[in-house]
Image (cartoon, rainbow over all chains, first blue to last red):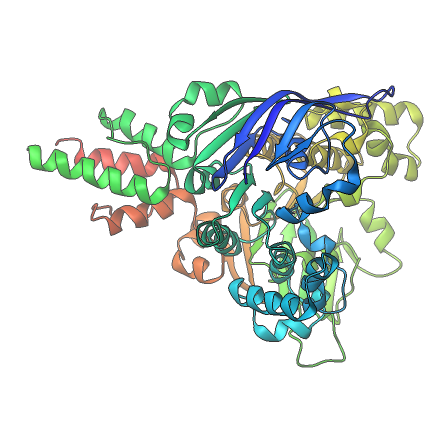
Length: 290
Length: 282
């Protein structure tokens, strides 16, 4: 499902003395099936954009197209049920939204609310628990007896149980240890591929953006200033710098290596693994030329 | 020899004392922290780090063992005095806000501690400047982004001019630049005031800046030492759900690709230097 922001502006507390402008003329196209990373300095408007993707916020100017639905100022809230099912948002620290007696009930809550039969909701919950690498006996436990990392997974399962077409992730690994972080990011990528999801990742991690995304959008001062593929975005260091961002560490080390050795690697290294390969190749080439 | 600001002796704590099948969150843990040190407490999720933070400020009391802070044994009688010398910043800033504006929020604890108004105004300004949020004094906290909120929370702790600052994953929500700003602020503060810092973190790059690391695993202390000593244990850290600093990961990946690297490099500079020395004649 495509999402299209056209000339979107948003002001918090509009028409009050506390009015604060958060977005200016944002144009952003999230194509169906893409993995889009939204990056930007703290306070650049990333989270405000995110809340427009399932009409939690309605633009105070411009329009948001979510699939066939047009959202603008004054769109009635009661017609947004379908959108909320189709676009699932995993907020920061989603485990804070857990509430039910058991993990099973918590995961089933969303689907049941949308009229999914109990049997089907329960089937989804069992399948998801397995997919997310949780032990099966977790289903009958209270979500509050689980570890932080497990609670995070249960909360994510609750969003996935709605079977959304678009999955929006707001810093989904904040607070997780390095292993948990990698496992969850790999899981989202697997789901993206297997279920053909449209994925939107809001992140501070240039490394995650470079590793997983096929489209990157940079937010700066409430505007969407650049969109492009990761190679183009992370090759332009001057531009990143203007928006107070840095390339991923692998790219920074590549530049350091190139400068010291006085050679240029063939391609930009978006991941650590790619950098190791590119360096090994360059060194081998040097050997062969001797 | 500096004085000891915090010590734990054989501390055990369990959230379910009646159920023996539940592993204690912290088991037989001992360590001491000297005034002026920067300690990083690292470990996987559920390793007991946050429980330790709560034991250190008397939010929890051990089932057995002893906590001594600021030279006093932690007890119901001493904890208010101990806490007044301790600033704490938690992971999620949304749970820490009370003020209607940024400056009200920073002033809140000062007001509670009876700091006179003129002094309060000075300290609020100063601590907001230290975290580079002075331009936001009159903003409502809920309009700030996550990272900005966390800087304000840190300012709130700094305003009390604590001897000990405990950061419980406090920089985990900041963008890389914001995180460096805060770490830099803390470094400067330490230089200027001798502030003791305990940072609880998953961020190995942040931990690498500390004087000493304490690595937790399943409620036990697994490793302790300088960053160099701890990172030398390489694969053991990965088994513990942690990671290696970037330069060490790259060293391992390069070896896998057949590049000949002898050293275990902690920094990118060292790594590139070795590559240059062994390959530059080509």
